[in-house]
Length: 278
Image (tube, rainbow, N blue to C red):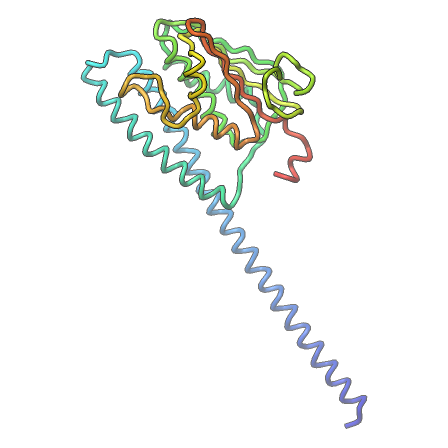
């Protein structure tokens, strides 16, 4: 066989191997796609389970916590409600672990209309808030934010329940939304370390007992509480702080003993370029 014939054979063999490699590469790509789809289905299932349990726990914890608030500690049902709260705390911890595992793979964020979330929560909470507490919503037109909607619900529920606890003799609980551009709105940005930018603000104000400066410094610490033993677990505000921070948001609090407390939560306005980075 001459040299040209041998070269032709080698070229044919190389072409056949190239086709075989291409076919194997395509097969690997298909398998990787199938694995990715299966992982996504698993993560979606985790999210679905966690979301459903979150909603159930919100109903349980709000009903039980406010029921305890309305009864004397010597009521026979008080201890039963305490056990319910402890069981809810254990269940919430399991859900947090499930979410933490999922977040190692993916962070879920949806575009949220904050006002819609607040109105929905108000409908859920109003029947459970003591009748002598007036609930008011002052909702302005605000931009959407990118966040896990269940986490936003948890934040608002925790602040509302905290405000209700602060008004044992009744009062006024106001939930307000607004939009602010840091660096321009001096009244909001004074004495804060919030970076410049556009934010949606959620303000929860109560006319309750208020807090001293010493208590105010500690409220976001895990397990810190001013409630009597058996009346609360001191984890609500620390979880709120962690959730807000994880969403690139900021939380501020102002309080005066005997006059009430105001929480302001600032969450970044969604921008089109967030879709590519998030």
